[in-house]
Image (tube, one colour):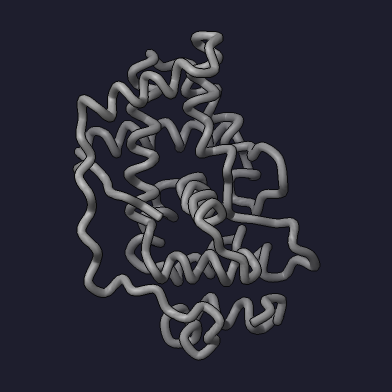
Length: 213
């Protein structure tokens, strides 16, 4: 799970979301649909947007992406991931899920940070809740790698992004985040806890009984 985050400035965040929203606009209706395996429309459009930036801005974008994912590293958002993504939660899956939340756009992401249960109102989540199989997701691994892909397209060097990111980490230390006092992980198999903490998501998914306890 997350190790920490640097302090974000409003300029960093505003610039970041402008880029994401342009990618979402380019992706069209797919931006608010549940995704299947393979590159997401938002991630593919994001790579295009990022290739238009200078190399240092691509690295800065990725740092802000990581910082915002850290903000979503909470017990209740982990539980939302468990419920929506069919009772499966690993570190990688949760990282993908948090990236997918960013792909839903600023208003959706900030609502989830404030109240994770608002995910029940999103059309992508509603689509997942009524699907017959296990092939629809919020999680978006490809979005996590949009910046490295754009950087490689700029430079032709698959290692150049990681070298630049490592150098930036050395120059801008990221302090360890203190644990949140009320951010405990709880028994994700406990449906009574779902109803208490995430009542809208619980109602949506327990109705269809797709999650196995």
